[in-house]
Length: 135
Image 1 (tube, helix red, strand yellow):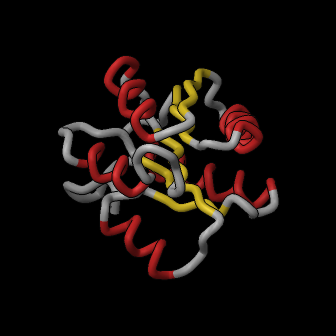
Image 2 (image 1 turned 90 degrees about the horizontal axis):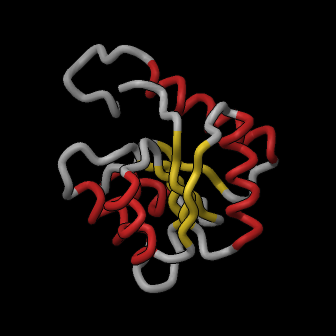
């Protein structure tokens, strides 16, 4: 899978969307769309087909986990990086089980969040050794 050139940011808090947009720009992704709830996110995915999705877990209308499950049910779904203030192993494992590509803690310092994002983007850009690029 190639490195994404655009992304959808899904979070109900405007300041978090601004923070994530800044991280994405610093990682080389200039084109972004934004959604403040799960229903809006799925509509934007259907319309614009983003190459990456940054998805909060706690959202109005549909939870981020419900959105993730809906996305994974579609063939060719983009990689999803989950975002949350929750750092419990149970939450992280549930995200991975549902198909999340990576997980970023919202309260991480900017440098750490950017490092995790860049590492995830580098993994997307790397040639696949097996049939599953998300391993």
